Length: 109
Figure 1 (cartoon, rainbow, N blue to C red):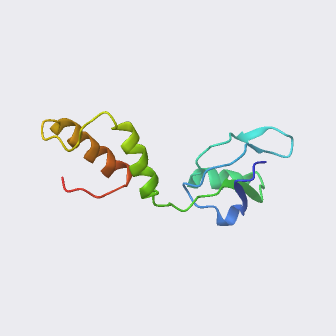
Figure 2: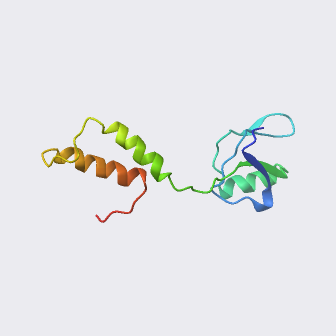
């Protein structure tokens, strides 16, 4: 089993959880493949097969992007564009779009 999982009792499984490893029955047969998304029907089936716990992938908390690293990378990517030149409006616009996307900024539609 991988280190990025936790064992969750079937009674506590929520629809939408993802298996971190394949799930085997008592005979060694694969019941569910690694990466399977659990549904209410799947949980009911697990209970019928007397499965007590399942390996579920851990959900990492979302981390905000490192702004300094993103800006340094974009400086490198756009190094051949003269963003101070008003004639390079397309380069400026593209840089702004990419920067907003990478920094997960909310922009007005």
